Length: 217
Image (cartoon, rainbow, N blue to C red; front, side):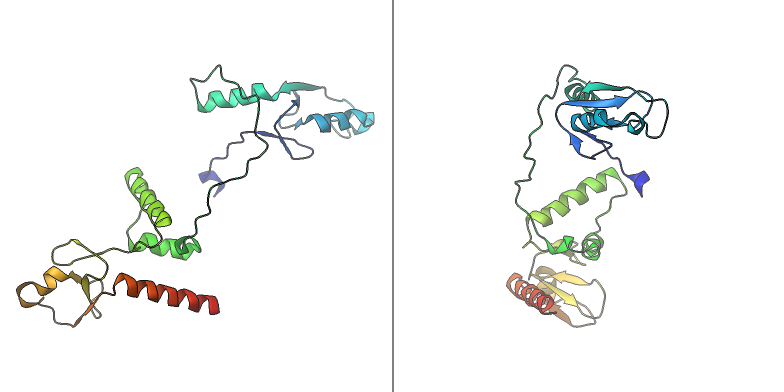
């Protein structure tokens, strides 16, 4: 699926040692398209014998030219920020460790769990508008792990049913009614028996018991 992804290299990688070049100069070859080495590899290249220099096992050797990394970063910045033509990045922090708190959620443990969350709440990404809404709701569940993941709707008044405030039919699929519609006019007219939704405390207890069972398994 590499055609569906865009990879942007914000720093140049040395062809020899494969380390990102954040300081010094970048030595490039005008004849070879993807050949670039760092200062340390360039010093090693100069100490080699003539036949082992770039390009390897060829009689005609190529000349390497230095390019300032600050100029390279400035050109990259102009690509993403057109108005920042005069801005140059001269220093890159050595400590790039992420200090943000790690958020854990059972919906992101497996692909199937995330798929169930999206299917149960009809989260879709086929249009920009739906993708924005789905991403917002996914972030909401990530930052609010105790909030109910699946919201049910009353089949009579079509309003959302709060946790522990509804009734469900065990025979008909996706048939739920709220307390107001259930007690209205002496009870809802439904051929099957309706059971009360578990409260938030009961649901937490069930989730805790299921989590402990998964740990034991």
